[in-house]
Image 1 (cartoon, helix red, strand yellow):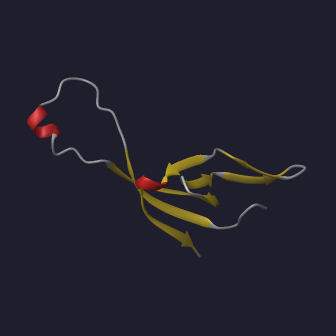
Image 2: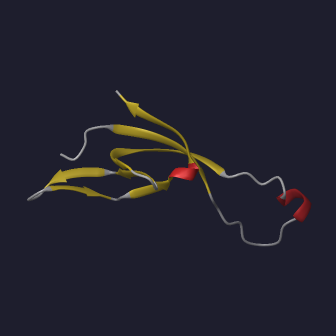
Length: 80
């Protein structure tokens, strides 16, 4: 298989909140802080790639690719 490492990525996510808002309050807006768990696929110059599933066909295959941009990553932890 491509990887057997399971990783937790803590990251700050962007969001959109539709509707009217108070501009003074909006100046204190923070990102949504998330923890995402998945099979570690790659860490490249742009960010981290995780997958939800790994399986075997003719070659190693993964499904449900998740990409988290490097600038949003706060912490990465490999589970034991």
